[in-house]
Amino acid sequence: MNFQVTGLALHKMTLNSPQSFLDSEELEEVEDQQLLEPEAWRTYVEHRNILREFLTTDLSPQLLKRHHARMQLLKKCSYHIEILPKHLALGDQNPLVLPNTMFQLIDPWKFQRMKKVGTAQTKIQLLLLGDLLEQLDHGRAALDGLLEAPDPQPFLTGWGLVEQQLAELSAVMDNFLAMMVPGHLHVKHRLVSDIGATKIPHIRLMLSTKMPVMFDRKESVAHQDWVSLRWFVTVQPAAPEQFELHFKLLEPRTQQECTQCGIIPVAACTFDVHNLLPNRTYKFTIKRAESYTLVYEPWRDSLTLQTTQRPPERASPSPLGKPSLPLTTPSER
Image (cartoon, rainbow, N blue to C red; front, side, top):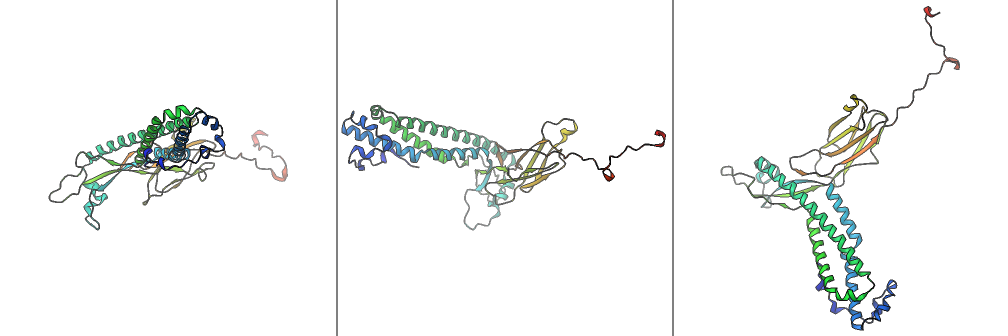
């Protein structure tokens, strides 16, 4: 978005009459028109249309709602370091430039230090995104209140400040959109040491995101002593992923029941947990298995399910429908 207040071509706007700018909800402005000179009134209407267009296109409530949803999604993503060569010629088959091979050449201690840098950079970026989105919300509320103000005179006299607000909010929106995508990691030192005469290419580090892992609430079902769990990733990865399934009995009543918990590695998006207690509540948590490139994972999905109650045991009926008599031994006769 490159909205510029000075580039709206106001001189090209033709005004046949002040009434041409009025809609059915602004008839009360006719009285205000009578309080202003015709030229001032035309300027007032022009400025109102500029502001209204900005609030309905560049900063509409629907657009802000989508940005809030995207922000909530980013808070649930996991963040990883991606290693890429800085310069890779098309068709180059040198295995040393492949990312998987580069891991074998990188100093592990330096890479762990870069992971800490990546964690800090991710946290800062998420905080800045939240702050920018808050500025957009407050800015729109302030401009919307100005648009609804009944007195046109302050609107005219303060238009210079309004133009400044529009330009500032446009810059905030540009920054917000630019920061939505994780960027480069600044590498102060070489992560790959020179190995003899072998030419090691320079590398670049990028922060990449992976969409959150979430339980399928409709397909995850609890039974009497087992549960069937399903989960998914909104954007399917190119390669199969490994997951960790955590489960725990809530409110155990005995020391033995405290053992009703565990961590299960799963290489699929479905798993059945057996040997559970009936009519009890369990908490299940799903996450990706921690990888070497993971730098930040602020959220993981959890699901609480209650197993069904064991059906009551029925007494076996006696022959011919008669009540059964207790058995006695000869000594009891």
